[in-house]
Length: 559
Image (cartoon, rainbow, N blue to C red):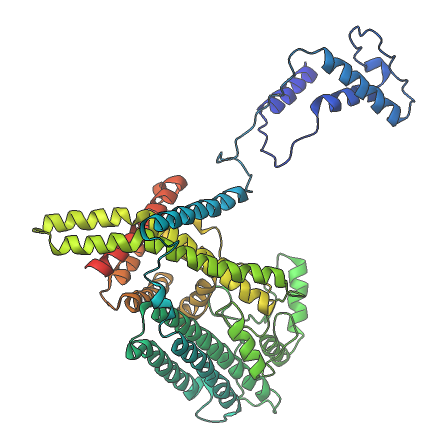
């Protein structure tokens, strides 16, 4: 009775097993079944049905090749007599099923580019019919105007970031007021504030086009974040270096013996723990380790912790050997905003991949220009004329709502192209140039459930910067997590408002307000009875994203 119940349970378990979809076709089930039947002992073989001209089954001691040949012949004879082929049915899930673990959807990525190609060809044919030319870009003069002045100014701006290097040498060699923890932080902050103001105001003073200004502003903000990360991390290392040198002097009662401070690399500033005794009496192994730590001099442990903090994770660079011009220029080219003594590197460059990524950058810019010329600028021009002649505010509201709805798809497409051109192709090209190893510039942000998750996964270099230099710094001065998160969002919202103001020459605060509204939305979506509905949250995220982009454009351009 027990045996039969076990067999029934096994059969039921197999029947309830759900198979995942596979990328490749499985082996022929009929051939496999026939081969296993031939491999069974003769007492358990299933006799074949009457087959005229059939051959006897091979003996049990026959070589495997003979058994395989016999099984293949038998399977082919059975197959030739079947009028309808056998179909294997089993419990399986579809590729798009939520329970499916299949993740290779690269064909849709190819389809995306084919769709864009069709859009471009259609636009070119329409332009040829209406104007007699394949493409007529009204924005083309905006790209060529101020080009050489933009190139020279950008090169000068990059060179001006080099002021960080002599300042760091000054902080390291100073023995008085200009040490990092004394007047160094104040001096560095003043230099960075002046630098940012000068280069943000420069395009306004030169009256550049919006295309040149948005490129220059984005590059200025990126270089500013690089300057800040380089200065504050090297400043921390200079303080650690001075503490290590003080331990080389005779130890006196006033010698600082506080635990070494590890610079924030994850979520918060923290001290390297120093063990003073047995921490866990229940675990003998931990007790032995703690007893061993007790036998080591606290000064020796402190010196070891400080030396580790001054050394790169890979162990090839140590502060202050990194304070060189080549190291600083390498950091400027690396596709990251957070400075480290050393980065993982690939052994060689793939020049063909570099060529493809460079070509893709210009291809995406071309596609964004076509999308803007065909689907965005005509809508905004038409709406601007209609709004000027609208008799009542109700008519104006209807025209504005219609404009937002007509811009939904073009801005969704532009958003995806901006994502690809920056995080996949531009950063990928610089990673190939510098052999930068860590190329995870984004995560699966398209599956985000709220804006906080999106901010972590959409732009990993910027997220790492804010986590390290804003959030962790705020937590380091004993601010609570909600306050530190609010400060991070506030600074990020100011940066986004600055970018929108440079594009449109209008500082209205729309972008700042909409971005700060993400905080209450996150609090609502993180309620237990809402957080569990992952599909609903993802739908809400995409709806807010698509509407928000077109709404921002309509507000800044038309209002």
